[in-house]
Image (cartoon, rainbow, N blue to C red):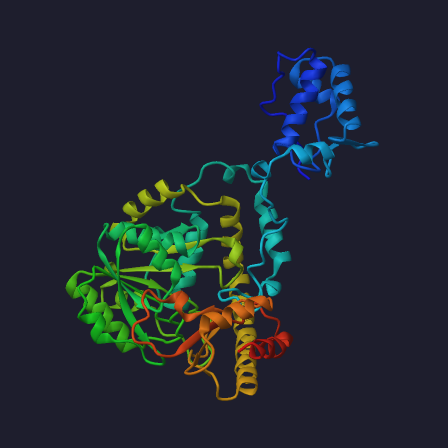
Amino acid sequence: MQPIDIGDFVLDKTKSSRQSAVFHGVRERIIDGLWAKGGKLPSTRKFASELGISRNTVILAYEQLVAEGYITSVKSSGYYVSVDLPEHYLIQTSPQTHTPHLPEFEPNLNKAFAPGEPALNLFPYTKWQRLLQRHVSRDFIAGNRSVQGDANLRHAISDYLSSSRSVVCNPSRVIITSGAQQAMIIALMSVLKPQDKVLMENPGYAQMRKSLNLLNMQLEPLSVKEKSGPSMTDITSSEAQALYLTPSNQYPMGTTLNTEQRLKIIEWAYQNERWVIEDDYDSEFQFAHRPYTSMQGLAGKIGHDDRVLYVGSFSKIMFNGLRLGYLVVPEQLVPRCLEIKDALSGDSPSHTQAALADFIMEGDLLRHIRKMRRTYKIKYHAMIEAIERTFGGRVQVISQPAGLHVTLKWENGINETVWCERALELGIIIRPLTYYESQKGDRSWHGAVLGFGNVPLEDIDRLINKLATVF
């Protein structure tokens, strides 16, 4: 339990004595719930020193509080607020003054099949801890740092993206952000204004939809069909000022844009002076084919990369709690993006950036990606086998072999929201397709998204069977 700080405690001078003032002051804070049950009180010496009174005065007040049941004395440890307060206080307190009951722990958001969760137990935490420890005592990086981000990390990301995704960039075009969410907000604010239209996949990434609503921008839904993806005609005929896409593994439908489609979109953006925000989601984890070159990289080859903003993060590659992402922008947008980031959050955590730079440059990131690509491929096939064996023909997997999730479709039977609610009662998190939709459109079938990244391989069959029992 966190120790109690005296803080703004003052003696009530209307009381008959200082001892009485201490007693009633402490008692009132306990009754009002300002000092938590089980909390450790300051020592009598510290309490007296803070208030400039005699220690004996505090000792006598504490003893009276012990006698009346408001605090307890633990030998060789100190004084603590009682967990069970006096009966007369409980009777006198009205229901309106009760402190709301709060859970002792946060709800578990990482339960089985929760989408977007990598295999948290397989990350090399020991190595990561050593890298953090390497930099934690460097006072040079403990002060204010560049809003754009650690220079070594930007250099490492630039090299990584150039070699793995053919992204055309250099460290000066890379901006370190607090995850992909902040990168998307900066991208939107740097090129658009309120009420501008953004063409966005439907169903699509819910966090992007929230960002558009926050910034008071108009969302123009771009229908994504199973297997085939978005319509090129719908894109090239749009009057929207920007287009947001997850071209490598569309989330959540799991489709991929081929090179020809990507080039058509780039040409549309260039000819009409539109913007493309490319979220290269799950590009590292393709199981059926080699990844396509990023849209930004293709645009760079033909000199059109000044219309593409590239968003990425390390949440799915490493772990969600890292909260570090990046944004690659055209040179002319860098000053504006830094101005926005400075207003939103200022610089990013410096020691974590330094550790991540080493993690990338020393080859640990690439080794981890290769290991996880093999692991997720095995898990994906285990999911497919378990679903086919357990559900038979009642559901079908419509997403491609990639990433950390599978998307299910079924024509008849249980409502998708009801199934998700029943799954939660079993301690399993799955998401209905409606969660990702800005509008339902003409969809007549049901769908749900199951993440398998953080599910142990040996548990997949059992958990799929549990889901089938409430389908």
